[in-house]
Image 1 (cartoon, helix red, strand yellow):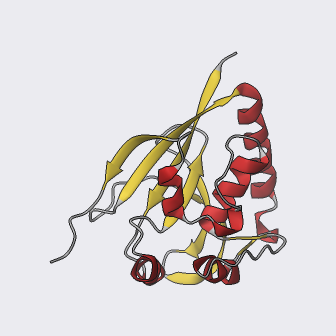
Image 2 (cartoon, helix red, strand yellow):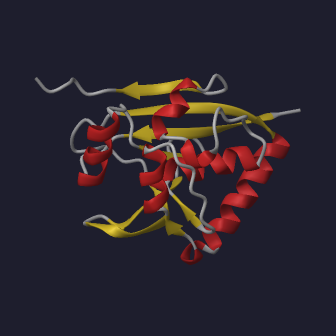
Amino acid sequence: MSQHTVYILLTRSGTWFSRLIHLATQDNYTHASIGLDGPDGPFFSFARKYPHFALPAGLVVERVTAPRRCVPCCLYALKVSDQTYIRLKQRLWAMYEDREDYHYNLLGALACYFHLPIQRPHHYFCSQFVADLLEGCHAVELPKPPTLLRPADFCAMKELTAAYAALEEEEK
């Protein structure tokens, strides 16, 4: 039985929303994406659709590019079976084909901070989406429901292996 590698990319960008999440949580990472085609991407997540506007947001493809400044990030690898990889790919592409039906779960992201699970049909925040996809396809067993999983929580998952990490120095 052959295995495939799925990648989870955690980042903390300089957007106002990311800075707000970091301020509230003190987590090193505020955004999660999933990639099925190698560490160079593409990666899928729930995020802003346009670079200069926080909303609208939804299911998007993110390309890994060289950042203009050091962006704290960590790339995790997850080994999965052929069957799990096929399930992940099928579910991801089905969702992406219907991406206009999916929306960013701003209420869920806020509720997650207060440890309140809010599940809304066709609504996800970034880490909820990655967690739900992994759990729904039996790739991992989560320590808590997807609606309560923050990006930084992936760092503690024993099934994930760190493939790359870059943290910027704390501002003095």
